[in-house]
Length: 180
Image (cartoon, rainbow, N blue to C red):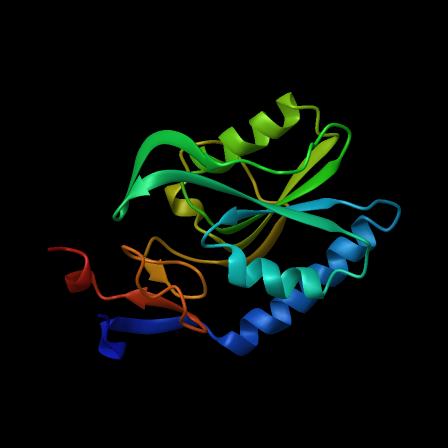
């Protein structure tokens, strides 16, 4: 069980997230005005953000999810595993990948290249958080909610060992909670 005092600070409030989801939805609507993109959420962390984002995209979009993993605890293990693949064929489609956070970039790079290899017409990335300080792969998000520093963030879909996902904001987890 987690405690509210596990949170060092709130980085992004629920209100800020809602405002930014509206802004990003409006930008995507403008950018894809002549298209009907497939929005692909990467499970599980992107679910709250994707739900808010797609409500603000004024297009006839489709959406699907993939479950990919490269983390154990707080560390990326390097190997990307597809645990649940798309149910939608992507050949000829414009895709918007929705992620909770772009960290090292390894997962998104692998997923993006996989979708392009399968015949996607284009693949753009929309992320709630961008943690550029940890990037090890040269990949950039096309739509960014917020820039964050190199801190362990949780909430709004992001977790530590499956805890804290349902917080309505993005917070920084106190180091003593994961340095055990």
